[in-house]
Structure formats: C-alpha cells, structure tokens
Length: 447
Image 1 (tube, rainbow, N blue to C red):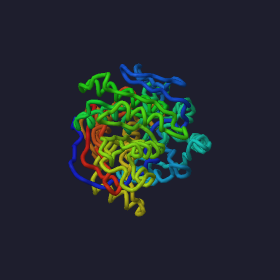
Image 2: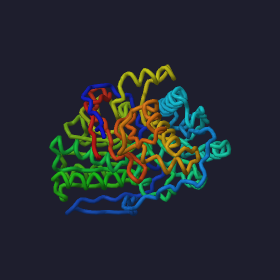
Image 3: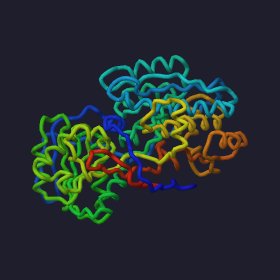
Image 4: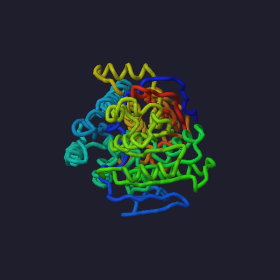
C-alpha cells in the first residue's frame, strides 16, 4: 500500500477548539482530580476514568440473503448546538461524495440516497430523534456523530438495528473495544495514535522532564496514559514525567498549575478542552506560560483559533501541538466550495468524504445494501488489495471481483479489525504572537 504523503508546507489553519473537542470524548466528566509523578506526591479525590484497548474487536456477520434496494445513507452531523460550526465541512464532504458516487453510476447501479439529519449536542436528545427517523426511513448506514459523546448515546440503537455507524471525527479510545456487534467504524484516527504524534513532537523538541495536565474523562486520561508510555519508549525516564488529572468543571486550576511549576518541567502538555484557556492564563500569571518561554503543547481538544480568542493577546506565542489533519490539497477544497461556497473551514471534510465512499464500496463488494453485509466488508476494502483512490477508479475493480485497497482523500486508511485507520496523519501546529495557528508540517504515525 502507498504511504500517506507528508506534505511540508505552512498553511493557516482555521480551527475552532470547540469543534475539535467535540470530536473527542465525553462532555460529561467525573469530578475530582488525581495528581501523580513517579517518585512524587499523589492526591486523589476520585479514580481517574480509564479505557482499555486490549481486546478482540467484534466483527459483523453478513446475512444469508443479499439486499439489492438502493443504498440509503443518513447523516448524524451537528447542524445545531455547540458544535454547529463543525457541521458545514462535514456535510459538504458527504454531499460531494454522494455526487461523485452517483456520477459514477451509483451503488449496485442505483443512485445512492441521502437522508440528512442533525446530531445536536449532548445537551439535547436530537441525536436519538434523528436516528429513529433515519432507521424508520430505511437507512443502512448512518454517518456520524462528530462528537464521541453523542455517538455513545446512539451506538447501541444503531448496532442493534443491524445498521452501520461510521464517524468521520470520533477519536476516543472508548470505541476500540466497545461491544458494537462489528457495526461501528470511523475514518478519524484513534487517540492511541495521537499520543504517538504528541510524544514524537515533544521528544523532537528535546523535552526530557515533562508535565502532563489532562482532564478527567476517557479522552483525557486515555491520551495522557498513552503519552506517558510513548514518552518512556522515547527515552524519557518515568520519574521525569508528571501526570496531573483535573476536573474540567473546576472553578480554578491554580493548585494543578502550581504543582507543575514546582515540578519544574522543560515541557508541559495540556490535554483539555475550553478550560485550557484558564489553565494557560494561570500559567502565565506565575511565569510558566508559552509566551514566558515554557515549551507548552496542546492536542486536538484545544489547538484551535478559539483558544487564541479566549486568552490575552500574545499569551499563546510558541505553543505547539497536534490535531488529526491531512493535507487534502487545494483541488479538494475547491470542490467542497462548489458544494458550499460559504465554507471557510475544512476540518473532517476529507474524513466525511472517505466514510461515504468506503461504505459504498463495501456495499458493492457485498453485492448488498444491508447494513450487516456492508459492515462485514468495510475493513477489507481499505487494505491489502489493488490500490485505487476514487470511487470511479475502484468501482470496476470491485465489479470484476478484485480485492481493492481504497486510499482516499485522507490518504492511507488500512483499517484495523476495530474498524478504524491504522495510520494517523496529524498537523504539527504552532501559535504565533497574534494567537493565530499555522501548520508547520505533518506527522504520520502507525501503519
């Protein structure tokens, strides 16, 4: 298989941090915090939330009789709620894929049907209502949600209906071993891979004594634990790593930040959401913020321009970090703009596009539009076979019975048995003195 191409370019990234944290794990966090550093002190008010990824993922079983009715795909994407600004690029990616598929002859020689739907956010029951409507309408595939929290609200219902759920943006480790009957998939890489990218970035910059501040939910604690492991693998001594788990709903993060200062690290990683603004502001107050010369790193939950708008002018200068990001190229962006001329952000548009194409190719390979049949074929169309990069190119190969390997807009996919990319592409982002983000480079891990 072809590897993802690492494109070395500087490009302005217009990313909203709320959009990105919505793609990660739960908005609901347990209270309390845990602070630990090897050889140091520990204080705990509650157990940190942990997620196991050591399992044999469930696999879907194809049905006995193929279904040859038109493939119906429902979307579960944020049109309203706190993540509504994330919806447009994802919706555009889906529509562009459907246009391309139908332009190439459709699925099983029939036009693919799109059933649009809103996911809302975790404060509403919009997602359940949308899923009910789309299941009643005969959807075999539901694309979404963007938020892992929202996906977890509906995953059981979708899987029990024998329908495929494929998310373009979920990154939480919680889905790796989730009992989903083999019906859940995602085109965004898991945070197991982001930990590798973050650790690589810190190590390349020479970090040898590292503090990690992480919010207490499966996303934060899982990413923090994996980062610790990867830093140790990179040669950082365990007693040189401090991990502090905090309650993101706390009124103040002074105690946690003071612990970081006392540890005297040469690098600080903040794994958080919108509360990261308070943490960084406090860091600056005691002289250890990014603009004060401390090497500070962020992740997809906070590396967005919204963070720059939430803190004082210039406070983020030199802060670096990672976020799932692939250089999809100007040509693809232009095609998206033809679908929605108002687009200004392109986050997860490529992942949305690929999710639709993968589902369609799996249906073609199964010669069936039944959800269980599609699910049983999704992993295989992304790896090991004859390489192809568009639906139009892949379709005749599948019709001829050729085992294909779809490498999409987002590059190499090569799904694992868990139904997710084995390779992750991450933007290496940096804030400038204007608190604006740029992309310096890309880090590709896994595979």
